[in-house]
Structures are given as C-alpha cells and as structure tokens.
Image (cartoon, rainbow, N blue to C red; front, side, top):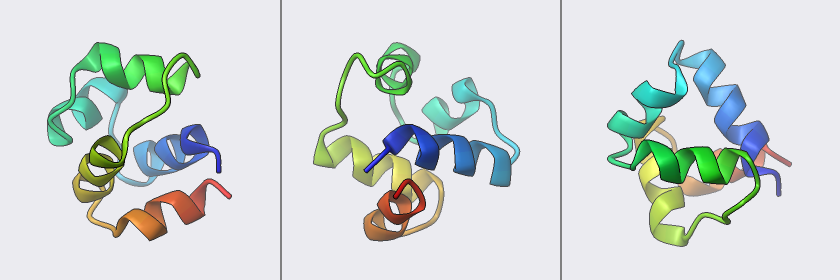
Length: 66
C-alpha cells in the first residue's frame, strides 16, 4: 500500500494542491506533509478523512496506491 500514490492520484484527478486537500480533509497541512514525505503513517481516522475529501470509500482510496 502506497498512500503517496493515492494522494498524488487524487490531487491530480480533483485538481487540488496539498493545502486544498488538507482543508477538505480537515487535516493539518503539516500532518499531510509528513504523510506524503513518509515521516508518518496515516491512522485509520486520517485515511477516512482523506477518502471522504476525495469522495471515495477508504478501500477505493487505498486501492489506487496498490
């Protein structure tokens, strides 16, 4: 599972930048940055927020990165 691929895919598909995704997912920009730079693994709660912001199920969000 590569969450960075998922994040990058949805950033592109939704025409968002990292700051916009952080706002949509109700995440701190620093937290999202740490996840994207492989310094932190996202919790299930964070994955749920990211998937919701991208309007997909968590399983779909994760599948994009596989």
